[in-house]
Length: 328
Image 1 (cartoon, helix red, strand yellow):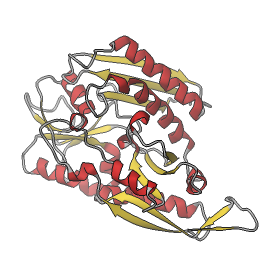
Image 2: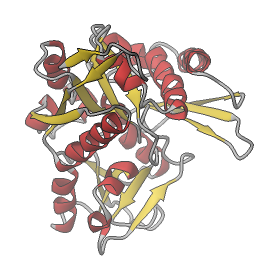
Image 3: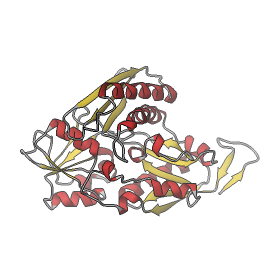
Image 4: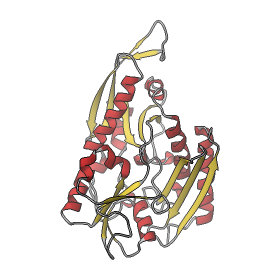
C-alpha cells in the first residue's frame, strides 16, 4: 500500500507496507529478512511482511539427475505471486534466477544487496586433495559436478537435494563423504552450520561459481512503484557484477541441451587495484573438457558496460566451444 506525499522526499511515494514473497526454508527466510531490513532502512515508516511460499524446487526432490536436467526451478511460483499481486516483492538468491530468455519479461531485478562470498565451499573435507579416492560428494548442480569431475575424475557425485540443513544431515549420516555448497548460504545460517565439520573454500581456479552467486536480489513488476523503493537499496558493485555474469550466462544459455541452464561458471570481481576481472567457463557435464575466457574492465565500470563485457565474453565462450559442445 502506498500514499502520495505532497512534498517529495527521497521517494515520491511513502510505502506504508510492503509484502515480500519468499521460499519457506530457513535460509530463504533469512535472505528475505535482509531485504526487509534494507527496505525499512531506506524508507520512512514502511512496514514489511514476509509471505512464505512453496517453490517447485522445494516440492520436486527428484535425485536421479542434476537440477538442470530435471528442469527444477526455484523462482517460478514466487514470480507468479508477484505478478498476481499476492505479494509486492519477491526475494531470490540471484544464482537461482533463470537466464533472461527463460524468465518472465513482466518482472525486473530492482535490487541487489551487497555481495557475500561468491565462492563454493566443500563441507566434510578441508580441500579436494584431502578427499580419499572415489569419495562420494553431494551436489545436484550440473555446474559443480562438471568442475568437480574435471578436477577429480575419480569422485562419485551424488544428487543431494533439499535445504542446507537436510543436506548436512545426509553428510552426518554418512550418505556422502562431503558436500559442495554455496559459501554465502552456509555463512548466513551461522556458525552452527559448520560446527564440528571440516570445510574449505574452493578457489575460483578450481570451482568458478554460478552467475550471481552470493547476491540476494529483490524483484517486482516492471513499472511498479516498488521499483523506486528497491533501487534505493541497490548496491552498485553487486549490480555491476550481476550484470556482467548474467549477460555471460545469457549468451551461453543457448548451448544447453536440456530445459535447465548449461554448466556455466562466471565471476566478476575487483582486483587489488580496483579494476574488474570477469572470468567465465563452460564445461562438459563429464568434466572432460572445460573452455575458459577472461576479460578486464576499469574500476568505474557501470552496469551497462558490465553487461556488454559479459555478453562479449559469453559469445567468445560459445565460439570457442562450438554449438554442439554439450551434445556429446
